[in-house]
Figure 1 (cartoon, rainbow, N blue to C red):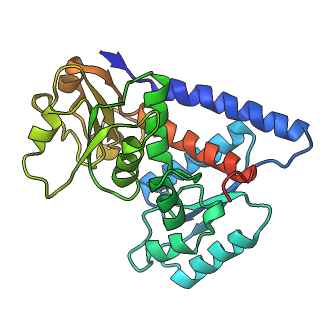
Figure 2 (figure 1 turned 30 degrees about the vertical axis):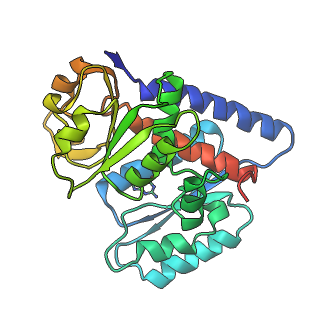
Amino acid sequence: MKLIDGKAVAAQIKMEIAEEVKQIIAAGGKRPHLAAILVGHDGGSETYVANKVKTCDETGFQSTLIRYEDDVAEETLLNKVKELNGNPDIDGFIVQLPLPKHISEQRVIQTIDYRKDVDGFHPVNMGRMAIGLPCFVSATPAGIVELLKRYGIETSGKHCVVLGRSNIVGKPVASLLMQKSVPGNCTVTVCHSHTKDIRKYCLNADIIIAALGAPGFLKAEMVKDGAVVIDVGTTRVPSTETKSGFKLKGDVEFDTVAPKCSFITPVPGGVGPMTIISLMRNTLLAAKKVVA
Ligand code: GUN
């Protein structure tokens, strides 16, 4: 069993990005600038956004954090999005999800100029990704594919089971892995809450990507020997062991599943650090105007 060290890979890519930013600045170019809009005080979102801002500092990007309270009007948010669209100093921006119930996430996402949509959530980017055109690939799927690539994990002809069909992870990662590319060329099965006998599909899988948000869902009896398991779950569960009073729990029952795997990602330290680094990479692409 080999542990996939997302933290180490992310640190390596962070250095590569910081080096590229240095070269851009040395050549008289503009520092890449990422803006983030955070609504409310959800603990998970606060942590993610703080990490994004910190990673901007570490890679030499400029960052701007824009905050609103939970009761912000949808129109106020949409106007801010439009302002960022038109601000030439901002290369890319994100609106941290989830948003309060009175705000339409889709309306917000579709108001973002797709050329600044470094989250890759806009339908133009989703559609372009699905047909293999240059685009911003959303951060978590991009991070997963990068890990498979850097660990030299064969995907061609393999059966990949994706657990979960979210717009943020399940759908895009299934789409990427079925593509005629490397990594890619998988036969993909997407399982979700209405799938009958998920165990049957998982037992047949060479690669399992668990993105359900159900802590400890994937058990050893659902995994065949030698499988590759990628755990995308990051549920915050209360814990007396940590200072913050919670810890992150993945969708995989790690202790029992890991001994059966050829490769497995831990939680934390697997997919999570890769997600932020993929966002930085997209912002660098936005600054270089590669996706237009
Ligand atoms: N919420 C959970 N993951 C993400 C992400 O990648 N981007 C944004 N904007 N919100 C999220």
